[in-house]
Every structure is written in C-alpha cells, then in structure tokens.
Length: 171
Image (cartoon, rainbow, N blue to C red):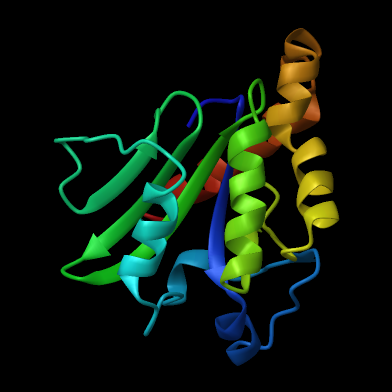
C-alpha cells in the first residue's frame, strides 16, 4: 500500500451487531482479522457490483483474488476461497479519489456495509458524511496535502515504529 492510498475494508453491518460493535467511529482493541466477516454473503453480487463500475485488473500472481483498478492508484480486491467471499479491500488514491470514493459510498449503502479504516483502526458508518470526513482526515490525505510535513511528524513515525516492533516481539 502506498502512503497516498486510504486503505479500507467494507464489512457487513449485521456481523458488527453479532459482535456488539458500534457502526459509528469506534476504536477497536481486538484483531480485525480474527472475525470471519463474510459468512453467507453471496460473492457474485459484489463481483457484479464492481464489474458494472470498474475495469477488472487481471493479476496472474493473485489466483485467489478478483481485482479492479490499479494497484498503485485506486484499487479494489475481493479475496476468494473457492466460491466464498473471504475479504474485500479498497485502496483509494488521495490524489484522485472522486470516482472510487463515490463507488464505495454506493456499495456501503446498497448492501448495508460499514467501513473499517485500517490505519485509524476504526469503523465508519455507511453515511456519506462520515466516510468523507474519515477520508479527509486520513493519513493518505495528510500526505497528499503536505508530503514533507507528513514525514516530519515524529509522532506518526514513532507510532509506525511501535507497531512494527510489537509485531516482531509477538513472533
């Protein structure tokens, strides 16, 4: 993922209720990947949704994935396990966000999804105002607005180093 990409994961709102999670901006203190989000969700409807709006990107190295867009810019990926939807990720280029941001809002509202903001570790309601606000306050937008200032932010760099060190200590 590039620093100018806002990395988000749509998830079914119904699964959030099963885990008693709020759909409004809420910090999560558990491992996002530990929940099986897409149980009983039909893969074909999401593939159809993106096929109608974006150009597919055939990635021969990713056999268990269907992708649209460009990995370095605006990108959508659906992980598959057989015919089951395993995950959905969206990376929105902060330099050219309009189309994919709009598609993401349409997706969330059409299928009652919430958005998990990977870098902020928060869930976002499908309401367009919440999604726009989260995007405008994302690290990707901060970088796009002032790249030099972004990398001079020692608190941000310290946070990255803390997270990486914690990952290494777990292993």
